[in-house]
Amino acid sequence: MKPIISNSDYSTLKSLISNCPQHLKSKEISQLAAELDKADIVADKKLEKDIIRLNSLFEAEDTGTKKTMKFMLTLPGQANLKDQKISVFSPLGVALIGFKKGMTIQWALPGGLKKIKILDVVNH
Image: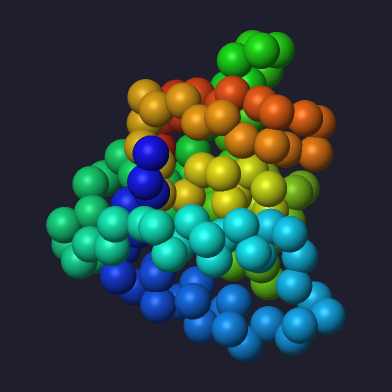
């Protein structure tokens, strides 16, 4: 499955990754760069409303534990778990950006290999 990324998110994320000092580059940043390289890039106005992008509110479920989670996907400087905002550089952020409501993604998260089903996506 290839992620679908808006042109503006692609530009923003590529810039963030290329400007990130080498000593701060994590495994997730490398994974995000790889996901961006294989993504379908579309014009902002043509991106479907139910695809997770920067500033999307989403609800997802770990299909193994049936635990649901609700977050907003943000840039690293805006992430704050108390406010349910996660960074696009987080393992879950990398796993879900570019995928849409109804899809199930398998990804290696800190707790092991997980299947995550996207239950809802809200974009303003």
